[in-house]
Length: 320
Ligand code: SF4
Image (tube, rainbow, N blue to C red):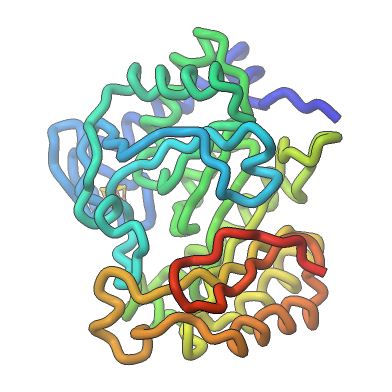
């Protein structure tokens, strides 16, 4: 099966330019994400995400550690944005997401990175932590398409995305790769400073599913279009895993692809809270796998738990 990225047609009709301009205008009183800071990022004002106009990129590369249909054989062309619109006390990438480590780049340079990764043979471009950079992504895409860019785009997000931004991305993003982190507003407030995360996230997942639906693969098993949801299982039931899986199965679809992640370890400020001060136990992860089965979520992947309790596991195996 071959599907052309849908943004090619948007570019041809001029709709990509319209979307890009509309998103740019939002930066003047920023409502790009659900924080609605309403500050002028075009004049360098900083909101919750501490990002002005220019994107800050911590790294870009061919990445082989994503789920098999995303990494494929030649790697996923990941572009890691610095800063984030969440503030998770256990963030494993906290030097990037919270301290903002990275280099400020122009949108032209961002387009250049996309072209470079395409030339290196990557299967897709994977924007990591993109929610505060949707305008800059649209602007860079326009430039890249003019230069012959034609890979599927992966939107690799915490799932704290506004519906208005997602509507601007309709027809632009081919593969949504969102998290579902919490169902309980209290947990979302305590651990990520986002009490409204559950309602925002559930609306976002519905919208992403409406736009792209079930994951579609080519004859080599590489993702072309669709949605793949990640759920990081936290210790002590803090990610409300059973409820999250129930939501996916009942409110999205039992056909949705799920990546059930066991790699939690107490990074950043997690050690300051007693309940997040340890890795996930084998029993807790096994229980999560059983709940996925109970709700009929048969499409997707789970990780092997590292017996040593050392670093995060790196192998993703097909769920049975
Ligand atoms: S993108 Fe950043 S500045 Fe804009 S609303 Fe979200 S957190 Fe605030």
